[in-house]
Length: 173
Image (cartoon, rainbow, N blue to C red; front, side, top):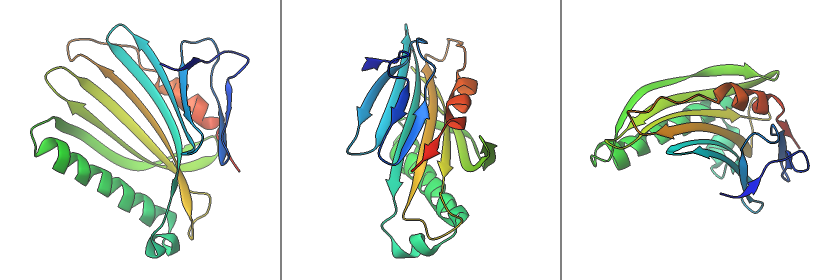
């Protein structure tokens, strides 16, 4: 599952951003410095919680010139379209409760999307938070993703509040 997060390594520093993870809480880090990706996983029995942070480069000149909200809307709609085309239409899963909005965390505005994916063997709740350094003309943005997955018959504690506390420590460089 990766490296256990302790007091010695709970401040995750990437070249474009950093976050602080609560130490000694069962989180394990899988890190990809080249992709500026930090995935944190906590697993108990058949339940898996994940926090995932990464930087996403914008390569399209029209999107670079667009507002942060326009890029966020484009990215979120594309994500929904892919889930419908690759999952729902192919009978792999049901997609429910899609909600998009904006939320202020740690004094920063994030564009959000939440949804639920259901299969016969899996119930997965996901939350995505997109942060843009500027109101427009961004060459990249940051993605923070939280998910909890479990068998449909299992009820588990949510760590979304802990994820939001981690997201409040987010700093970009």
